[in-house]
Image 1 (cartoon, one colour):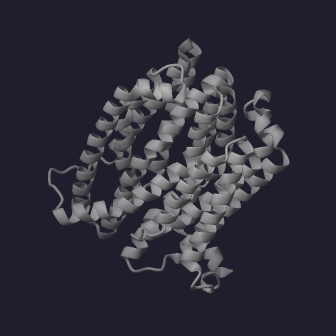
Image 2 (cartoon, rainbow, N blue to C red):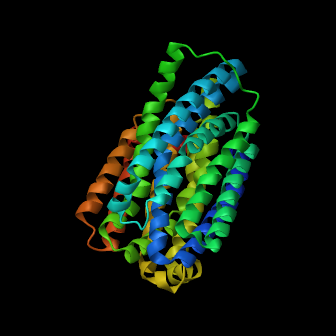
Image 3 (spheres, rainbow, N blue to C red):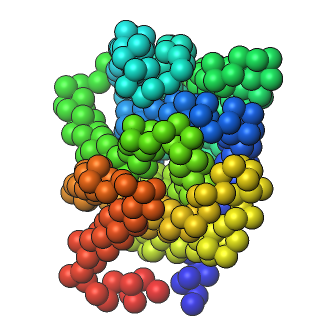
Length: 421
């Protein structure tokens, strides 16, 4: 019991609490944004906007590895006190992110008509607006990675506040002016720009003209690859269902499912701060030769403590939650709400294990994530006659993923948890 109390007084717990408070506000703002858009636009147009939001999450396939790679080496060089090396790494990653972002801009603009036809949206303009801002989305990942690695969680939290408030206020204003989905997407795009500016000002002292060596470059790429695989798995798990439902179902039903996914993902985003704070602290402890496995158990415990009440509420009062958040026109999704929340809870805990291992520079567990993502996609393609089938597939796949990760990491050490406690 004394060790457990020490854990909750640890830097992970306090930093996680800070970010969790901030992210609670951010998540509340994001949900207000989606609630207003869902009510103002109606299910059909909200499905179009939800597709753009989903594409934003898909872009994290590239943004998250950029931020996580930067965060890990920022943590290592901060622990060493070698800011000169950190500045060189930042320069290399920044230039790569800028080039990749500009490439995505060209692709989104060029293929906007094809995306409109494939997803049955009312216009191609939202894809063009969204694509134009993608370089800033990737660049903000570099600056946030520096802040995360240096455990400057206060400024990091502020950058997420800037992103949320920009998106909320600009989108509400433009949609109220009659710009509909295009106005909401402009709000999303401008949030990237202002977030990048905020984070960039916080790391303005890390500038250099020196390049990193070929060995360091190879090391960065080697670390980034399993992170990339992990994010691909996360994208498939978190977003493939919305995209496939948009493809297979009529706009009205797709919009209702988008609302279901939005409510059900509360668990994942509510616990995101735990992973964000755990990652650099574990990397620093590993660098200094200190014990760190107890932080994994603490992180899993926090995620479970947050997710369990949410799942319970979605089971007991689903109709009330749906009606309050989105209105009576979305009540058809109420019976599925607790199942979706359960699936995201299982994945949130699985993600803690994956990120813990990545913070140690070990990426074997990412294969489980990509496999789960592929199985989920195939499962939904095969079983999508009803929305319930789509959700059942996710519950089963996420349960297998989490149990498989526990077995892989601790199956040969059944006494680990008792030693940690």
